[in-house]
Structure formats: structure tokens, C-alpha cells
Length: 313
Length: 220
Image (tube, rainbow over all chains, first blue to last red; front, side, top):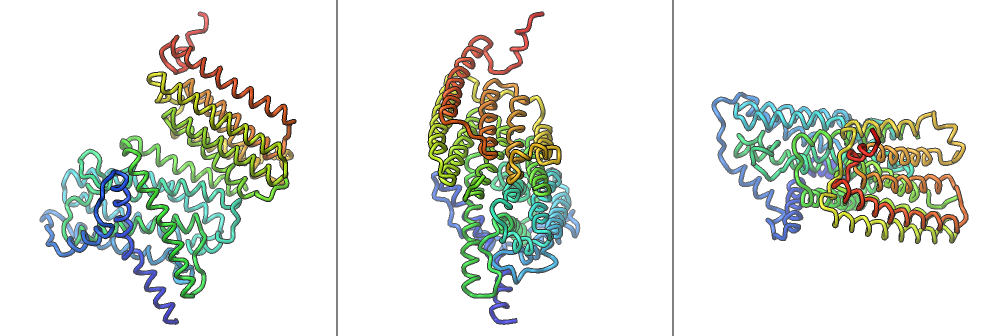
């Protein structure tokens, strides 16, 4: 393994946790600008994490070990998946863990522990947060599965790196079902990452919160890990969306310039997603909880329509 | 169809199809008009692309007229009606719920791509995929007409259906003399004006834009 390969592999592993708070910071900044506010610095999420890591934490005596280990599980899951998906190179990440089903169900694994931890303290907020999260997660899973199935069927592989490698050679005509599947994926992205119109990541209002309700009992270092994991998850979804559904600009060779170019292309794709999320959150209201299933069902049906097209095209 | 821009044609077609699906999901009539406006712009763009790739000036003229009638006149009239009629902003409900609506759309798409339509495929043997996509768009537009209770939605639905038919006929290469095409566009412009007058009259008479009270028109 050459020095460049070692650096690229390290970069791949560290990229998601290092860059993810910046994504959150940029989304907040864009939203603030759209509301005619200056907003906090884009680096504020880093400062928030630092602050939380320095703080002591309070853990209820009624909680079990689940409450204590859940943040570590959730965080490790995001690091593991972040290292397995294509970000800027197709060579470093050709791992068995890059199977899209493995990725999906590792996310579900993390969500499962988070929901358990939400209920563990026995507070009403944690309970309803977990209940809502499970409902959203179960409904979003179909859309996510079908949206990722389309590139998988098109590329005839379930490995996300393999999919990107094959889809890069596709013409725009062949990519049409992939673009339809992208819409399904984007809805699932919003739901899985607790963004508008499914959840409001900035609220602690009893009636509306989902993700925040589950982590309400956490403080200090464990809260920092959960916030960080949440940012990681968003970046992973953006990376999957940007590279699977728009599979251009990812280097397949270990060359310094190729990696720099790929990073630049990835930054552009990420900027597109960040802007879309921020604008969407600025122009639409959060849905009532009973309208959320309609939206998630739309995601599922769009995925199925794309699948119908791709198997008959 | 000999064209040097198949990818652009497919993208315009694909996005127009998605817009037809979105029309089923939107509850606000203003959004419905916006979606129709974008779809019409895509149709004009499709005609421009084909006009250049096939070297036919008539298609460019058609694109210009399509833009004028469907992307300028129609939205202006519709938005004026929405501003004038109180309560016209929100569309009347669907007959089917959103999940059922989406299931029906999915079934229509599967039908369009199934072996049942293969006999129709002789119309466009080289571009069977595009043909199926456009057929899906036509069926989805017809379903928009059937599924909505609102008069306004049904009128936009008819226009969306007309757009879909133009997409389909353009893809399979059905050509009419330019004079006839212009006459059809003139008809559409006139139809939009008549529909707007009807909307106003129905609202004045029944105080709503839902089709439900119109059932009472039948004699006992």
C-alpha cells in the first residue's frame, strides 16, 4: 500500500465525522440568511460539540445500560457506514460493508438502539419520540429500499461502490429511472434525518418533536455523540444521494489530482443538497404527523414506478 | 425519429411525467397552475430541441406558439381567476385517498410498460421506452380528470392531458400541417377563455368550485 493509498483511506474514514458538522452549520447559515438574519458561524456546530464534550453529564438512576451505550452504538454505526460508501474514490471503499442492504439495516440498527434509549429513562417525551421515530422509520424504509434498489438493479450489483462504477458508464436515457428513484430517495433522506417537512430539527416543542424527544434526557458527552452521529447520518445520505444518483466525477484511480478533483465535485454535489434542504425548510411548513405517511408513501410509489420502468425498459 | 438530442428529449419527457404525478399530489390550485406552466415550458423546449435536431422550422414556430398560449396566456388567466374567486386557492378533494391515488398511478405506469401495449409499440418501434413513458403520462393525466372533484383541477387536467398527447404524438412522429397545428393551438387558447368564463359562472351559481353540487342538475 503506497503512502497515497494510506492517506486516501484515512481521509475516507475521517471525512464524514470531520465534515458533517460543517454541513449542519451551512444549512443553518443558509436558513438564517433566508430569514434575513446573520445567523451563527458555519463552524458553530463544531463549537457546540466541543462545549458538550467538556461538560459533565447527568444520567437518571432509572436508566439501564442501554441508555449508556446507545450513543456509542449510534455514533459507531455512522462511522462504519461513512467508511464504506463512495465519497471521492471508488478504490478505497470496495468493501463488503458497502452493500446497500447492509448500509440500510445498520442505520435501522442505530435507530433501534436510539429508540430503546429514548424509552429507557421512562419519560413521556422519550416514549412518544421513540414511538414516532419508529413509525417514520418503518414508513420511510420502503421508499429508501426501493430507491436504492433501482441503481442496484440497473448496475446488477448490491455494492454501492460497484453501482457507482457501473452507473458512470450509463447514458442519460438509461439513467431516467434512476432520476425518478432519486426523488423517492430525497423524501426518505428528509424523513430519516428528521428534517422538514417530517420533523423540525430546531424545535423542542412537545407537539412536534420526534428526534429531539428521544435524546431529551441526554447531556454532555453522550449528547455530543448523538448530535455528531445525526450530522454524520445526514452527510452519509447526501453522499449516497450525490454519488449513486448522479454518479459522475468520482475518481477510480489513486492519483493526487484525481482525488482533489473528486473532492471538488463532491463539494459541489453536497452544496446542491444543502441548498435544497435549507430552501425547503425555509419555504414549507412541517406536516401534521398524520400527513407524513402520505409523503412517505409517495416515496415508496415513486421507487416502485422507477423499478417498474427499469425492469421493463 | 432521427434526433441528435435523445438524452435531452428523454429528460424533458421524464420530468414532464413527474410533473403529471405531482399534479395529483398538490392541494393548492396555484401550485397546479405552476406545475402546468413548467410542463408547458418543457413541451416548448422539447419542440425546440426537435426542431433544431430535425431541421424543421415549423416545429420552432410551434414551440413559440405553445410557449405563448400555454406558458403565458393560460397561467395569466388562471391566476387572475384564482385571485378573484374567494376560496379557489385550495382544490376540492380527491375521490381516492393519496395512497390509493399513488397505487393507481403505479398500476397505470406498469400497464404502460407491460406487454399489453406491445401491439401499440409499432407506432414507435425504435423508442418503445419513450412511447411507454408518454403513454403513462397520458393515462396519469386522464386519471387526474377522473379523480378530482374540483372544476378547476379538471380544467387544468384536460390541459395536462392535451400536453401529454402532444408529447406522445411528437415522440411517435405524428405530423400535421402547420396551419392545422396553429388552428389547434388557437382552439386551446379559446377553450381556456371559455373554461374561465364557465368557472366564474359556476362559482356565481353554486358558490363553490366542487363538482358535487352539479349532480343536482339531473332531473328527478
